[in-house]
Image (cartoon, rainbow, N blue to C red; front, side, top):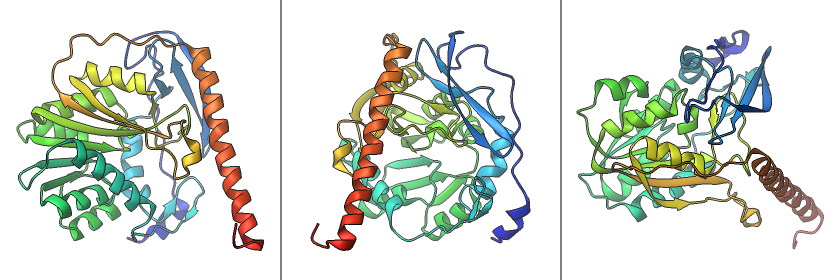
Length: 318
C-alpha cells in the first residue's frame, strides 16, 4: 500500500456529545483526569468517581476511528508525528508478547484441533499463529487494518471481518470456544456492548482472554484508548457482561525491576451468569496517589536502563 499519499492527509476527528453519566456504572460525578493533544484537538479524560473508569470526554465517534484503523494504524504513516515510520514484520517485541498471550490461553484453557478461537483486533495475527502452530486449532481474526489483513492471509488465518460490532450482531450463531482481546478492548468506543457481543458468540462455558494497560503503572492515555480501567473496574465490566474471572495475571515490563507495579493486566474469564457484581470501593485520591507512585517507579526503571546502557558503552562488562 502506498502510504505516501497520506502525508498531506489527516484523519478527521468527529466528536459525540459529552458523557453526562459513566458509560459503565451510570454515575454522574466525574473527576477531570488529564488530556492529550492530537493535531489541533485537545482530548480530555474524565475519571468516574464511582467505578474508576477513565474515558475520553467528549468521546470520539466510531466513524472517526474507522479510517484511522483501516489505513493509518498499521500503515507506515505515523499520524501523531505526521511522517512516515518504519514497521517491521519480523519477529520482535510483538512476537514476544504473542508468546505470553498464547501461554496464558493454552496453560489455562484446554485446546485441541477442534477448538475455535477468534482474536478481535488481531493485528498481524502473532497470537493466532502461535496457537495454530502448537495445536492446529481453528483460527479466525477480526482486524480493520489493510496492511495487517494482508499479513493474516499470508499466515493462513481466516479474516472474518473488519468491524467487531457488526460481526457480533450478524453472526450470533457463529459460536467460538475462546475470544481474545489481546490489548484491544480499550480501543473500542463501547467496551460494554463489545463484551456483550462476545458473550453472544461464545459457546456455553466458553472463555474470553483480555489484556489491558494498567493505568496505575503504565498510563496509556492515547488517541487509541477511549477507555482505561483498573483491575477492579475490568472485573466489574466482565461480571456485568456475563463473565466470571477465573485467572488474573500481571505481565510486568521487560525489566523485572518494575515489579510489583503491574504494567499490564491480563484475565481469563468464563461465560456464566454472575448475580453479585458489587462495585469495589473506589477512592479518587487514593487512585491518584497509587498512580503517582507506580508511574514514578516506571520512570526510574527507564532511567536505570539508560544509565546501564551508557555504562556499557565505556565498560562492556557492566
